[in-house]
Each structure stands twice: as C-alpha cells, then as structure tokens.
Length: 315
Image (cartoon, rainbow, N blue to C red; front, side, top):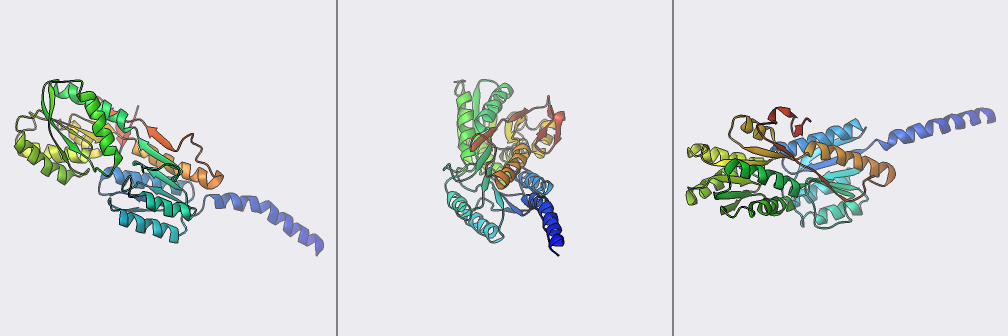
C-alpha cells in the first residue's frame, strides 16, 4: 500500500505541472469596446476575442457606446464573472478612471486600447495609435491634395476622447505652416457618419467657397462625402479621413476620398491580449512602458491595392 501510495503521489506530481501550465491559459478575458457598428471598433473587439481564444481563454465582447454608466456596469459584470483580465477601450479620458479603479481593486488587470485615461499607474498598459504622427502624415497629404491656398473646414471627433484633440492639434501643427490656408469652420461630429453628414451640410451652407475638409476619422469624412455629393460639390472639395476603414478604402478607390490614415488597430488589439496573457502568467506585460504608441500608415490611391484585410496594409 505504501509503495502504491508513492507511485500515485509521483504520478500526481508529474501531472501537476502540466495541469498548472494548462490552467495558465484558462479563464475569461472580457473585451469592452465603444460601438461595434463602427468597423474600427468591430475589428478591435473581434481581433482581441480571436487572440484570447487562440491563447486558450474564453472571451466576450461588449460595448459601452461612449456611456460611462454602461461601461461601469460592464466592468461590474466582468468582476462578477471573475474575468482574469479586461481589455478596455475607455469611454472617457476622465470618466473611465473610476471603472478602471474598480477592476484593479478586484485584482483584475486592465489593458487599455485605442484611447487613454488621464491617470497612469492604474491600467497595466495603454496601447494607442501614434495619433500625432498619423495626423501629421494625413495633414501633409491633404495639403498635397488641395494645394496651399483657400478656405477649409474641420470635422472634430468626440471631445471626451483625447484622440480627437491630439489629431486636431497634429493637423494644426502642419496646416499653420501654410498661411494662405484658412480654417473657415470647425464642427464636432463625435466620430459619427450621420453627424458628419449633418455638420457638413451646415458648414457648407455657411462656407460655400471651401476647397477641403479635414476629418478626425473616416466615419465623419464619409458623412461629409455624402453631403458634398448631394450638393454637387464633391469635385470641388477634397476630403481626407483617419482610421483606414474598409468603407474609406472603397471611397479612395472610387476617387471620393483623397486618403485615410490607417490606425493599426488589428496590431495593437492583438498585442493588448498578449500583454494581458503575460500579466496573468508573470505579473508583467513585458513592455518597457505603460503607454505604448503604434505608428500609423498612409493609404492613398497609390497604395490602396495593398490593403489586404480590415485595417491591415501589406508591405
């Protein structure tokens, strides 16, 4: 009996590391995005979910649609469901801090993607596009498209998202170098195509002589394109976007959009889950800093055929 007991003990000891190793890739990873009706956020959620499942976790994707109360409730659900990590695209740079704190207090690591919060040291990582670099790329291409003289307007994203101001400031840094380019108007359209369409109609009515529209994202830009087409002005007004969405790429191919700045959302959404996996296994993301920037790429008619998948540009 004693020898048999030893054999059982040794067998169990041999199996234990294997079981422990398998357990490292078990559990729920909760992914919370903004609004999956936007192809950018849809891709963000689907890539994160697929990466988590590939690593052996279960994963769910839910959306707060920019509402901090909904976001807070989704964090509560993740805590109740004993999530092992949360991948979050925060609803508000300030307003999401409390939700992140709740998760951290429950010992659930949080990795932020796409947008930042205005407090460091809470999330294990904040992975975002290099919006200043992308805005500079876009603004320079936009000037090449419209020239150096004339009036233009800007469509601005959600003011609660730091990315909106970062992109706008990046545009301004480039465009102020051209004193004969005059910003005749700016409207907030909250990253939304319908709002972009309505705000473009208003801007066009107030500024019928504009030659260009620079936009904080593709959805607003595509709304502007639709309004310009309706007004018979698209041939006279050049529009630039930001995101690299499939619809924007189609508009470039159709000659309706001058360019889009591709955000590597497919890259950093995958990386966010891998860093969450590292935290679960080792306690560290493996990255040198909390805030990590991913450079953007320019898509124009010259390289649009290299667009190989949503938000992916092949070299």
